Image (cartoon, rainbow, N blue to C red; front, side):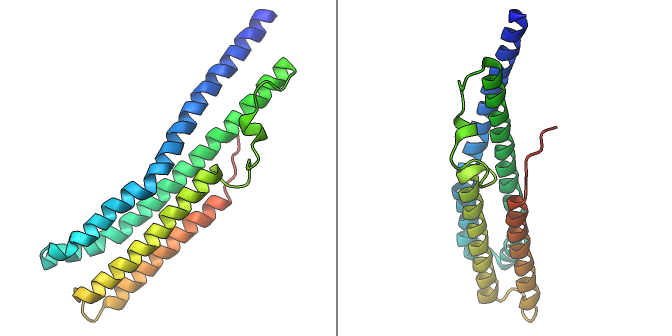
Length: 183
């Protein structure tokens, strides 16, 4: 019986280590998301004026939709980080029950547990990306109006920018309703 208990505990600890590695990966992905990606998009926007007119139009048309991809993947990392944190919490509780003592408990005892999907890092990263997206949408709208690349139909471009802004905000709102459900 003791061997089975030891095997079970070893398996739980091995999964615990693996889940922490996954959590660290997601945490790093979230931390790098806003500054690296936004810097790349900003560099494109800054250099757009040095491009030929047809290339300027392509950049200004394709940059805003790519921001949806940025928002969706950031939200996905935050959800996956949340999943890892909740699984770690479950593993801590399982180990403690088997050992009949509170041996591990960082995630299950964490003061901000369950307040935000993906914890504080998830919240801050998603808000940083959302704010950057809204800023970049404003800059692309301004750039489109200044360059007059779509004379007479700038309002269509503005409507597209508003749609993308709305979809980005919607992704953030969907994240706040996310709940981990173990299978």
